[in-house]
Image (tube, rainbow, N blue to C red; front, side):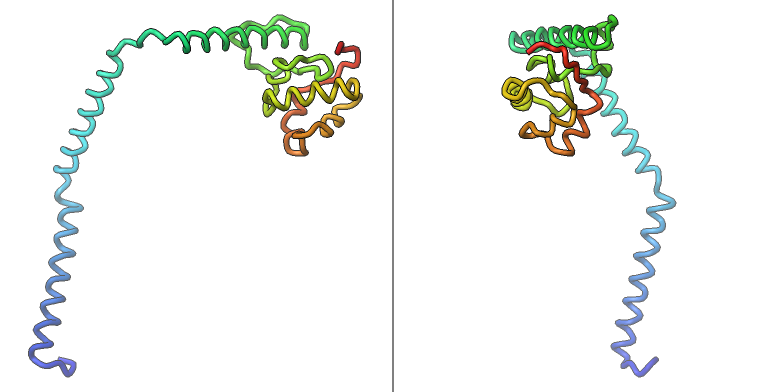
Length: 170
């Protein structure tokens, strides 16, 4: 057999036989031994359902004083947001639509109102107000790019949310 000695022929035959047995066992496990997989999956599903029921049965604990404060502040902010939107659009918006789009006048908005604009936090809102106090009201929306921290990318993100009313007070 291809110039192998008797001992080498035995080793080659053993390796081929082992390969065939291994492949056969894998095929059997994959195609004919599905019951154990179904049992394992059913056991997982049962455990999951038990944990789900346990979590749903637990009552939500009373919020801590700090959490109550955050809840009150967020509802106050939503109320303030609704007032800003009423002012900007001239129409009443229900509280539950407080996250809808509204234009913010950058010439008259205070720090809280400026923070309602995406990408504008407290620091950037203060910079806008300082810039407005130092240089007067914005004449064009593009002048907002002169504020430190407002580059091209930020400007593109905030421009749909802002407006300019030159009669604003400051």
